[in-house]
Length: 208
Image 1 (tube, rainbow, N blue to C red):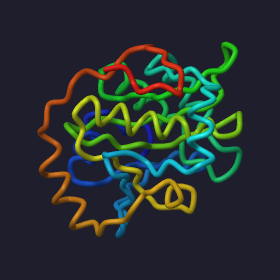
Image 2 (tube, rainbow, N blue to C red):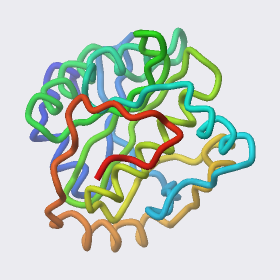
Image 3 (cartoon, rainbow, N blue to C red):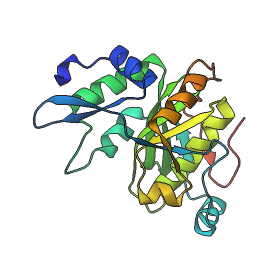
């Protein structure tokens, strides 16, 4: 479909059916994807390795939520084979403004150095992309995202497509059919509000 035709309402309908969009900037078109195997994280938390535990205890980052969603999306863009085109950015920024698009951010010395963004569909949080400018910042953001999702009452944390990095942090795969079964139970859950701009040192538990 033409990227200019993409709307937040269309994205919401697609997520309810297990699909998500990617944009081909060169063609100005958006394609829809529903992977045969869906990557999820246990809502109980990511796998905290010895190295990640050491980073969390050192608390080098301040974690903030939704303080600069636009910047997180921009940082998630890749120099090549990029799927976050201008229409994706436009729609997800609108989704954020509507209250169901969220970011988890790692800040250091007043600079945004890592983070992730995603969308909330009932009790399912679908993480779209993440980035880091400082070593381990994306790992900490992912850890904080799952912790926050559980605290807010989400029951699914969707990472969409498996890769070695996600697998090392404890992600697992479900068939598309099994994912839809879990999604059908989660999508009508009413969660607690996602926090706005709160900062916590990473070595401490998330705020209630």
